[in-house]
Image 1 (cartoon, rainbow, N blue to C red):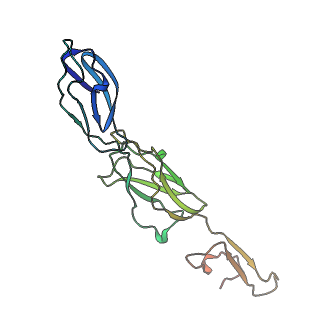
Image 2 (image 1 turned 30 degrees about the horizontal axis):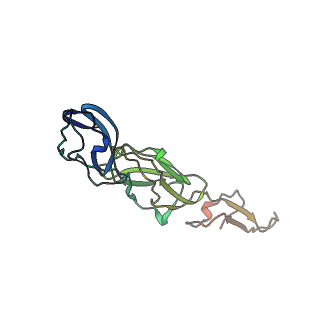
Length: 232
C-alpha cells in the first residue's frame, strides 16, 4: 500500500489528485489526513514509476490550496520469468536416445524462481526421471528425462506457460527451445529360418533376419544351436 499523509485535514482529496507514471493506483481509501492506495506497475515493464501530488489539487477546511508533495520513485519489474538458456550436460552419441539413456537438461531462468516440479513440463516420448531440488551453485536447475520404452520418433521437453513462479510473484512463459533428440527404444527382434528342411541332408543353411540394422555385427557366438547342428 502507498500512503498519503496530509498535514491538515481535507475533505476533497481524491485519487484524481494524484499523478502516477509507470503504473496505476487502485483501492484508494481514507479520510481526514490519512489515505492509502494500491500501486500496480505497468505490464511487462522495468521502467521506474513515480507518484506525487501537484499543487492546488485540494484544500484544507479553511479553503487553502495544497502545496506540491515530494515525488515517490518506485522500482518496477513486471517482466515474466523466462528461460535464459537450456543446455544438455554431456553428449548423446549420434544424437540418438536409447533405452539406457537419461538426458540431463540444465535450465537457467531470468529470475530467481520458487522451485521446479515435474508438472512444469510436458515431455514427448519420455518422462521426467527426477528434478534435484534447488539451483545447483547458480548454474541452473537440472532436469533428468528418460525416454519411454518401445517408441521411435523425437524426444523433446517443453516448459509450460505459468510452469514456474519467481520470488517476486512473476509467472513463467512457455519455452520450446530445449534440445531434442531422435529416440529409438524399440528392441530388435530376430527371425531364424532354414533354407533346407530335409533332415537327412548333412549340411543345412540357416538364415538370420534382424528386424532393424545393428550397430554391431552378429556372429556364430550370438546364436544358440543344439547338437548335432553347427554354426560356421
